Image 1 (cartoon, helix red, strand yellow):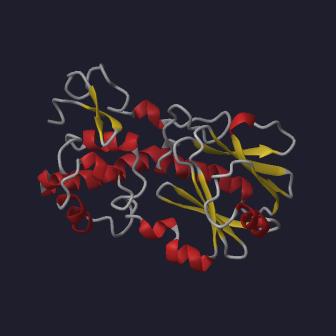
Image 2 (cartoon, one colour):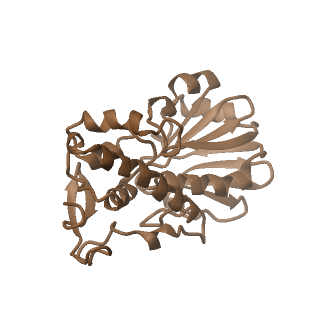
Length: 276
């Protein structure tokens, strides 16, 4: 699943290619892709509009339009935005869910093999009042991502700590891969309840959330299974993973065998020695 570093990588690639370009046509082939407003209204409102900027928050992508409308995209499990020429063949016709054409002859195409992706359109007022960012916790480098703000959300919960840091209302942008890496770096067992953690352990989560996600962004994210930010490009952070996908292998820190369990229905990798 694309997580915050992968979304930031997609933004970087698309921003240099489509900001300032005018939308000439929109085609949507997957009926459940648009939740708000209607598919027909979305298409009508964005044709002939210029993309003025691309932003993100957590795992969400925001296409800012010149009329102050905001086109909001979530990649979910397997969604991908590809930058292509209109003269090119589509990368994967079977999983093509939407196409946005530009007047300069380029396009971006949305592919999604699982079909859970989201593409919604808000006015500026709607976006500020009920956009997805209004329901989310801070990103790891926000000014309010502090021990004082995060501790109550963790310490008052009896949920497993992995489930807590995957909760986007607590911290924005952390997904399954990075949750495993953060908890390994913090030497915390993913099944421990939030209310069992001490102050130092919570501080370690805060420190490593920032460090690991920043490192992943610098390396273009993690390319596992279906994430491809651009044809011919892959992320490099998968080569730096310390615990995720290492089931049955020796722990890089202590040499014990890495185990895989399920926490909150998510496959979870941890070291039984380093993360007691």
